Image 1 (tube, helix red, strand yellow):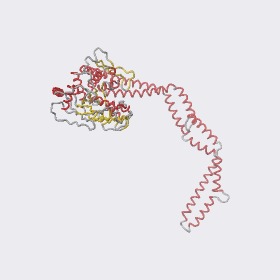
Image 2: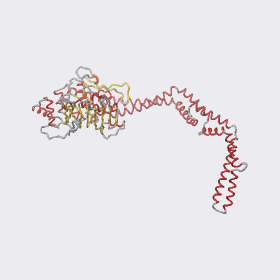
Image 3: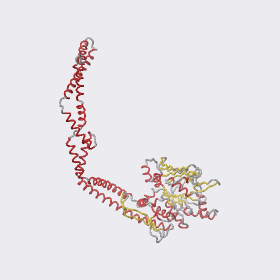
Image 4: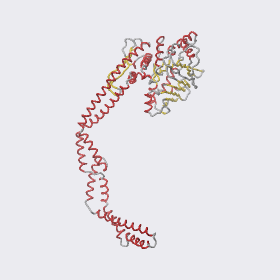
Length: 588
């Protein structure tokens, strides 16, 4: 529901604000006062296209902000969640158009591409007018409205679940089928690769150990020379070795530790170092002897590593990845080897998934056809009262070329506005006035469903009453009021019969000082409504008889449900919508 709109420097509007409530709100005023400009501004905020021409002459930019209450709007909630935009049951759309034509868009203060804003706007505002974009001409919207009207949520969920299950099995089948095309050739290749790897008889960590051993063996001469040098320095030096020096130091320390107990720990440390030195020398001796233990070992290590490196290069893996490669190839071999049995199982599951999907679609199709007959009859009946006697509305539910997550049906609204004319798609109805009234009939018929009424966007009707008058105009007004009692509706009108049915009434006035022109808004009190409807009935010179007629039109207006009056404002300070004391009988 639209709760507030603020417009600055848009067309001939300098600065206006309007607060709205639920129910039907009408906008009236002289031709050219700017009533439809308000609709244009709302469309702009909802993502409509615009250029520099919308900026008020002499201004730097045009700006429109629209605030919506979205507690019951599931589609808007889903969109905001997808965009990770926080909200507390309220959504603010803001659009700025610079004088050079550049455009910026914001949702709850977050910058947003205009295309994304338009997607959100379609869930919040639905404009019905002779020249405006309408959601009802989109086939997807027609299907959604039929499903909402028929309360098909559970059936739609069942179809969507079955479709997802079917899609998963199809994907599995396609992958298996692709594998089966070159199955034999792939199996032969896998056998060859696995035989090579199995012949190596690889052990975990073997490549690292062999690489280290190859490094050691390739430097055997240098390593042996270093070991010999260490032993000479520590034990076999011609003059004095390290072992001899430490032994002498230990002997001296032992001699004096009886003279001073402080030498005891020092003697112990020297003794430990001597023991460690001897162990180190023995380790070096063993290392040196091992270097010469098996001269053929180096050749074997080189051959073993060469075989491993050759296979690793072939498969473009590291040496330490050969065991993982062998496991991977073994798993693929087993999968392909049992592919025929797997394909049979997949085909069986696919057949079951297709049956479940078709069964779910059949139930949905049956429900759609039933809902289509009922909704078509209701809309046809409403058309007879809206200036289209003999008109007929039908909803075509036919098999879709490509069933999917929304079922197996194509849904299309067909209409014949005049007797003898064959039904044609709603999008191809020639008369804008007829299209507007048909849209009104569709919305009125649709909101008879409680599940749909609370989730509708703000419905805007721009001169939906064009081309009608008299009794038909009064019926249009009553239907709009009926619509407003279940969903928020805004209507631009020139007809007093329509204006008298509103829950709230806003007058649009064009003001000029001879140099500049601007538009002002004013929410009317009950007495002011009488005066405005009298003007609409009688013209410039309002007579007492016109006032009496206006009061009479307001008095019997039906009020099945109490709706809050919209509050509005004009120019830079919003007008308050406090209810005044009534001097004449008037509708609630």
